Length: 508
Ligand SMILES: Cc1cc2nc3c(=O)[nH]c(=O)nc-3n(C[C@H](O)[C@H](O)[C@H](O)COP(=O)(O)OP(=O)(O)OC[C@H]3O[C@@H](n4cnc5c(N)ncnc54)[C@H](O)[C@@H]3O)c2cc1C
Ligand SMILES: NC(=O)C1=CN([C@@H]2O[C@H](COP(=O)(O)OP(=O)(O)OC[C@H]3O[C@@H](n4cnc5c(N)ncnc54)[C@H](O)[C@@H]3O)[C@@H](O)[C@H]2O)C=CC1
Image 1 (tube, rainbow, N blue to C red):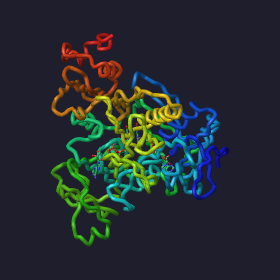
Image 2: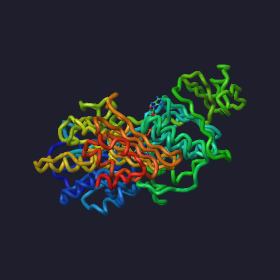
Image 3: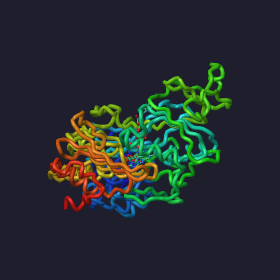
Image 4: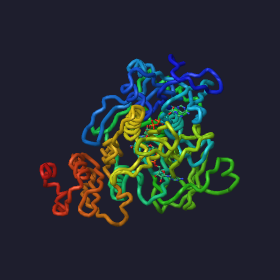
């Protein structure tokens, strides 16, 4: 319960507490927003309401270049946040209703809290191909990751559906278990790169996993031993915070067998039907074994708990299915009676001040859909870095609105910049790295050394619009500057990617 009650407005039933600022969600967006508000308004109570008992804290934040950032992420008990910011009160309870007409939220524990300004940061949920099917798992928080690991230890074969971040990480990390990977596209990793980069990385799947751990500029995820237990109890029915970089490092992703990778990719197909074992037996259909080669037409002799029929008519049996098919913003608890404007992806639309369509309500992170006119080289992706940037900027906007000040768009929205790691390669994505929205009016320049690096730049009218850098290229800062300053590079032609030219010196 809050220590102070500042507002005299009446809500229908008691008990009612109030805070000038209320933030919903203990993920990166919510925690960053609450921290910023606490700094701006040290004498005000900031109420952080979250469904999970642990919160996500950004630590060791470092701005490595103008837009690329590096930080660690720690799951911490909420008391640590309250100790660091005595004016933040964390309430562990889910919000079950938002009454915008009365400026108050109702929580699962039956209390009501009034706000002057509210920021919704309740994240997103996995968009599963089949809801309520016990053989279809999604991965979002610590609980779901642990459930996945538990199932994997008993598995001989699994099917992964989806072609984005989670699928890419899983197919590389899983050992001792056959993986049938079904993707809608021609090439792997469509959410992050093009067919060329996919080909570069696919060869890594077939080669033995390297034991060498490369250091790279990317965020690191840690979870304290003591907190692992807390988070395991955490989300009995409740949604925990999304996992992030290196989430699989503490988990032993090993099946029942003694081999490294065994991944078979089925391209350009989706799931047509899922059959449970009994149903499948009655259908008198046959399934395929794990393909030894593409000519393999034999029939699987094994019996499986579940079978997937793909749209290319192939049927495979497996122990379970991972649906890594994206996320849907977690807006449901806030919709009843409220006419929010929603984006096509189902998020709460926010303007260039992170303000939703309803008065005094802001949103940040995975829950929101950026609906401002973006910089030509920025796009929203539901990522850890953007959750932090949005949470931070939302707090500044809330502060500016409260004080009647104006505020410029944060610089982090000038250029899309993401550093991550796939198949043990450092991957940097800048701007319109996949020529998103540029139509046919663009050129690509490539440089590739198999097993070492893949560099692609996207050019439009002589200007650099985006880049994909895989491996230790050391080009990110120079390319970041070239995209930001939109210098006309026509005169340099292919020299831009000439490995014998020190490009950094060139543009100094
Ligand atoms: C497996 C996995 C790997 C990932 N890897 C990366 C990566 O390598 N790099 C990267 O940049 N991003 C990665 N992401 C994405 C990244 O984790 C998310 O984009 C980011 O964490 C979103 O932060 P958020 O604060 O918006 O939401 P969340 O972290 O989902 O936090 C939402 C919070 O709201 C709370 N909540 C939900 N409903 C309610 C309610 N009704 N009332 C109160 N509280 C509520 C939850 O308990 C939680 O605390 C990954 C995601 C997953 C699932
Ligand atoms: N290293 C990183 O940066 C990582 C980021 N993430 C983030 O976590 C979130 C969740 O990850 P993902 O679930 O992998 O989402 P994603 O958005 O990265 O990818 C979803 C994939 O599923 C496919 N898909 C959607 N519906 C489908 C269907 N019905 N059948 C078959 N395929 C379908 C899409 O084409 C896409 O390839 C995303 O926001 C992602 O960006 C996740 C892991 C790693």
